[in-house]
Length: 136
Image 1 (cartoon, one colour):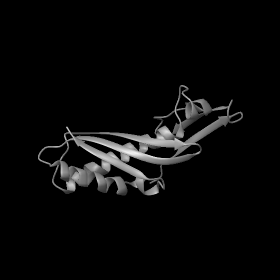
Image 2 (image 1 turned 90 degrees about the vertical axis):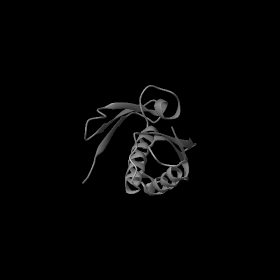
Image 3 (image 1 turned 45 degrees about the horizontal axis):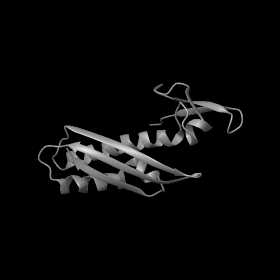
């Protein structure tokens, strides 16, 4: 299986602009620029997309590990925060809230730590990854 995405750019770094598209067309010429990446312009940026990918991958990994332990989540909600300092991604923090019947906070925290290190996106990120878990 291969998944694809494409980027188009016009102009120099600061004044230029571009767009991103994905094979699924969820992103279809979605605008990105220096302003959306390093300031607060309208559009997306690579770090935001990395955060979305990591949140999705991690949440699915937690669900898988829960299933292996005999648990089924009623709800899992994750926020992934990618920290960019200068021109380096210096960390990712995954914060997950789960509604899971019959699980202890300790069991959930252990499952979350396992998913933190072993989801596919975590495995390709060289920056430090941390997480916290909260049952709701």
